[in-house]
Length: 210
Image (cartoon, rainbow, N blue to C red; front, side, top):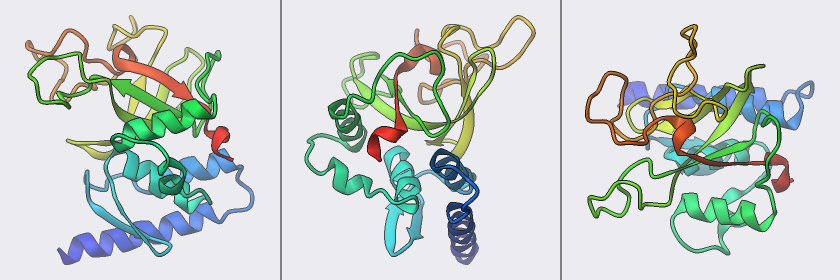
């Protein structure tokens, strides 16, 4: 327990330092603050600038935005439902979802049907269930994103919407990470749709919150 508290405090200090750098753009500060939290366990507690957060998918994004001047909980308060759907509705209300050639660092990524959220035993009827943040985009469209993974904690992963049904490129480059809860490469009983590109339901402009 003591070790976790020390780690949490160290991450808070790092986030403070990165968020305060004047030579970074707002988007760069978002990404720097998010990456400073890599390695924290899923749903772990974080205290940041006088507020407490639980690092599930939206709690993680809330902490990053709070560090960079946006109270996401307050922004979402007018919408109903679970946190990820309230965030989606907030961004929809700001017309933040649009098709563009490439997302930018700091943009929000959403996925549908990443787990059996309604508990009915049926795969594919759960709506929007997860969110993360774009870190970088390669020339071939492969997105590196950061999110709160149930199994890996705050971690980086890959997404390629141009090749959503393929885990790897012909040359072996990782295009899409496993996204459905419990899915993995080589597992024979993965659901029909389990890769991050396949389950991705939209990308929203982060600057809509400014």
